[in-house]
Amino acid sequence: MIQKFLEHNNEDRSKEIVAAMIPNLITVCHNSYGSKVVQKSYETMSLIHRKRISDEILKNDYSEIDKMIKDQHANHVVQKVIDKGYSDNMIEQKQK
Image (cartoon, rainbow, N blue to C red; front, side, top):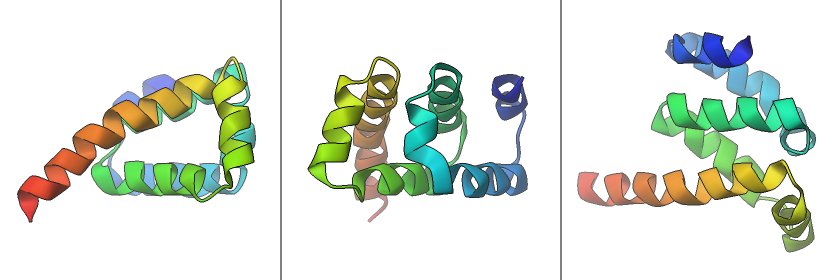
């Protein structure tokens, strides 16, 4: 349900969704449905919201990121952040 909602969101809703996810983002990523919601959020939201999600993941120490990489659900989120993050980084560089 939330994934469909994300397809038709606007900036205000995106801001609310990200704000609700951030406090428990790592836990959400380890859940099968939660990881899909985080991935969909990452696909559909603007650069500023994607950056908040990726910053929240990357602020953790290596051991937590390592756990995510090895988790059957969270690893998909890490892959999405890496793939999309690279594209986002290229966009930011072109804008400067």
